[in-house]
Structures are given as structure tokens and as C-alpha cells.
Image 1 (cartoon, helix red, strand yellow):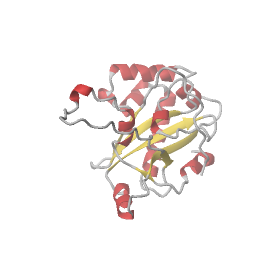
Image 2 (cartoon, one colour; image 1 turned 135 degrees about the vertical axis):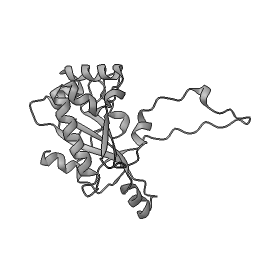
Image 3 (cartoon, rainbow, N blue to C red; image 1 turned 90 degrees about the vertical axis):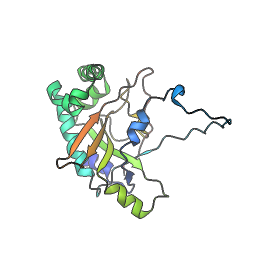
Image 4 (cartoon, rainbow, N blue to C red; image 1 turned 45 degrees about the vertical axis):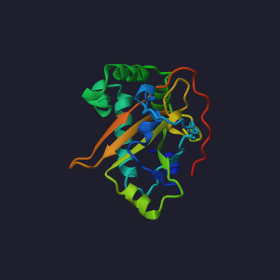
Length: 216
């Protein structure tokens, strides 16, 4: 990891490490038929703005765990060896369709991963969680930090450090994205710590330049 990339992680903002957070950001919409029926009319709930990402705090116990996982994942993806990266993305639980999409992204030099991991320069890297609401007490923040499960978003870019995603929805690796990202879920519930990576792939209109994020 470069010194410049490490500066991205050194931030006074401490993220929330909640297992379902990133999954919810990418989860498909629940069919309306599955929604409960109410006799009284209800007002539509106002759309909430997407939760913003924040670099993992350097002193978080989770930071070295995610850094090590990110290093292993990057090496496996860079090798393009499916026997190395597939187990990290779910192994036998990785669907054939998703496996094929990842394989195609890694083979495409113009994809976000092609640009980020196989560029001439060493890619910059940043690891993100969620910005913790100011309403959380110190005890609540400590409980989250001490939990047995956590989730983070790791991104790589060859374009410098001002192009990181601001929300999870911007980390979907759509064509033209200035960064390549993977979501990593981590568990220390069992005797042997375990983690799994997820690579989303956006479609449609190529991504515009991501809002700039000033390094900490």
C-alpha cells in the first residue's frame, strides 16, 4: 500500500461497520406483492439520501483485517486465475452468471478493473465504511467496533485520490467508472476468521466522473 493511499484511510471520521449496510445499498427491490396490505391509506415515505461513505479509521481493529483481505483479493484478481479469485467471491455459492461477468471484467483492459489493476502506475487504494450518525453514543460506537461481523468497501484507482465513490451506489463498476470496487464481508464469529468479497457490475450509461473527495 502506498503512503498516499494510506493517507486516505487516516481520517477523523469513524465509519459504521454494519453487516447489512452495503448489501442493502445493492439489494433488488422487493416485489409489491410481498408487501403487507393495509386498510387505511398511507403516505409515501420520503426518499432518504444515500448514506455517505467514510474512510476506515486507522486505529480501528477492523482496518488491518480489511487491508490484508484487500491485498489478497487484489493479487488474486490481478492474476486472472479463476482458481484463485473464485473462492474469494463465494466459491461453490458463486453463480455461473456472476462468475462469467467477473471473468469478462478481468479480461477487459478497458473495464474499471482493467484500468485500476493493470495500469502502468501502482494503483491507489482506499477502504470505506459508513459515516457514523452524530446521534450515536460512545457506548453504541464501541459496541459496533467490538462486534463479530463487519463490512467494508475497498476501491482501487489509477487516477489519483480525488475520484473515490461518495456513496455505495457509485461503486458498481459500471463502464467508465474511475475506480474499481469490491464489497468485503468479514466475520470473526468462528475460531478461524472468514471473509468473502462481492463485485457488483453496473450497466447502462457509463459513469460520470465521481464527485471529488479530498484526502484526509
